[in-house]
Length: 362
Length: 203
Image (cartoon, rainbow over all chains, first blue to last red; front, side, top):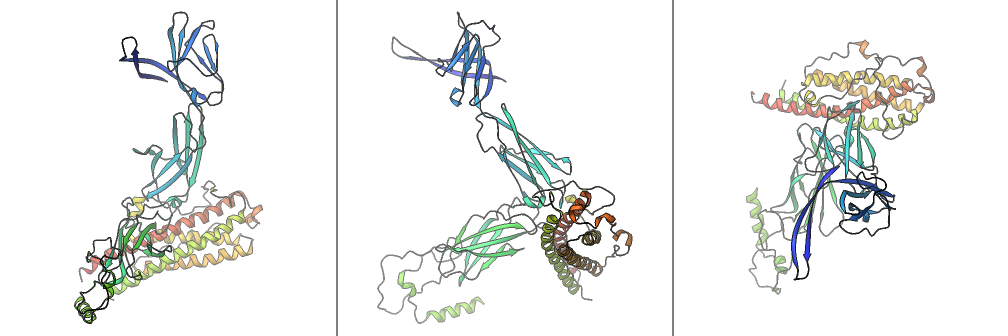
């Protein structure tokens, strides 16, 4: 494979101090040579006769690695990655450059690891792959997708390198899809086949725009709402069901709720005054697997406002505010958290006031 | 008759039919595992899928369809397709049960057939309440699933490979239909709700 190589050379001129000049040299048609790690490599200097005498350089310097010369050939034994470089040969005695070889040491590819998923059901699915071991040289991939003895059209992903997209030719199919990915490089190739049914690979993206808010005058409730993932194309015909999990920040154990056909839920058993962490996952109502958990949202149930103290008490008012959970939502709530023990001081009139407020609410 | 009352009963009828398909889907998963073990290798191997038989003796109704076609199905056509499919599949599973020699598997398959029969009845009742005619009950010829040959009453190791493949695909297609039906009934429910809203505007 021909390549144009652009190199910079900096020349330091001695004697009268240091002077640097930049010299660009274009090396046309330096050919690539790919060799297997651990093997013995022979490099041929152009098309010179077998009795020609040449000298070699690698990256402009003498070759330090163990090597043998045999006429126009350079032999390197048990090559490794440090043998990589630009090798040039010069014909003796005048030193004309006769050839330039870019040596790349690598290994043939092993079977790639392939996964496929549909987060846009029933539109289509995508497959991703990767090599589990590096090959150290460029590898390309060929993808073939079969269904009902037909080859499906495969579209490369514009952004992700090792990903491609396929449209479902039909829905509710009983026949499996067979995806074959072949990794190819200059030293060899290796294939992997993944076989699956349409229903098995469906996994939506997590729900979006999750919000959780306290509900005024309800110290044990939190109102949670969310949206189906934007990538799911037809929420009406292919509805999703949801799984909500929540726990106070200080506890380890989650509580779960499964919801069908609803994008909101009221938690009614929250611990008063505790900050909660909430997440949602989604799944097609019939097939596939649950999505990953959504981004976590935090919320604290509504806390009753402390009323001003109208009678003197024996309670000492601390100077600093005791830290207490601050609700993170935009619900209307007093910005200042209750002040220490003052929060527990309830005057004689406040239950009446509360009762009156509740009456007005209803 | 009060139209809103009719609609409510139709919706609950669709809902219970939907629940029935979910139940049968779950039941089938269990039976299928046992049946594939009964057939032996390679049928009981993970991800094994034999080529689909295209013989005229076995014309299984395919649940697979182009998305736009499925989307645009009118309510009557949607239900009729389901009805036809289960009529054929019920006969096929009955035949499968008949030719199965393992007694417990035979019992499971026959029990499953009663469930399938129930589903058929549910679909027919729904079609009647919506005012759609039910053609499938008439054609006895179509319902008659061809006998799988005199040699089919054999223990699995002696069954021919083609008979095993047939058995595999009957259950496989039935699985797809139950999955599809769930989506069909959900779609039907939504369409009826939408049409009832427009209907009520005139009352």
